[in-house]
Image (cartoon, rainbow, N blue to C red):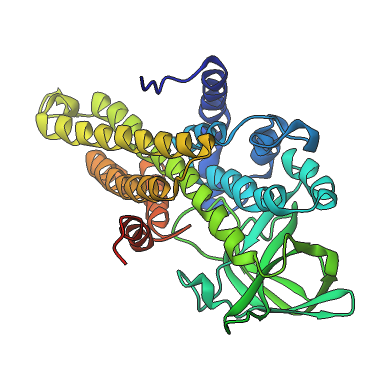
Length: 384
């Protein structure tokens, strides 16, 4: 019998993070957001709570939890703010997870304890300025010169790549040609501060303004040959796996945003009066919010299902794509409808729904566009 009730451990974690989001993040994040400033103190508290180490074994400094625990945390954070949620998601799923999944024992020992404590952030250097969804069109190159990799190229839209606590970026680069003439793509760890590795200015973004996103460039950037992550030529396959897992996490984040829109709309509809009554007493508003809640609930079920399959060790690519597709589009719709419920106040940055509206759209783009998710689902159905 299916039972999606949380066990005691997961529920305790969810409740703890919900309280943190409500009492610590909510009162302060708007100031960071409007100043376009990274919230180091909030991230530090998240690290001390063990959130960056949730899905990693204790032997590497982690909390010994599972990936579903991370998803629950992301949902609760995103109910209040997506900037802190994406900082955690990228730090864990894109920064630390490749090292854990594919790194050598030495690399794990070197990087994971500090990443798990949130003392360092890791980043994932996949997307390139001319690449977008075509990650296989990688132009960044890495050649062996003695016992060093020499990296040249650039990356775009890289989260957590330029903070004061960023420790490494794992970069995909063309390291040769395969027997059938295709690009051989490998993954290489580049520590922050390496000569030849330049971090650009923070982008001026529509949303996620309290998170760090930058363009990176590499010019004759040299790192030890031992910084190769996993096997040479397996970098593209590694990051496809990381993206499959990450889509579940983004679905959880999108679900949180969708639910946060419901929370704020219910609160506002009870307080705001028009024509002598609270606007929540009118069916026009009731039905709008009921539809928003329906979207949030179905999004949650979708990512729960994908996470369940992943933790069982069963194929989950299609379910992850469905969860990411459905929840991101629901988040965009809920953000638009929540703004409508708030009327003119929904267009004012002092109201959380304005921030949610600005944050929602990127969820249909990052970690695989909605079009890519539809393509993955269709392919899995045998439509090639």
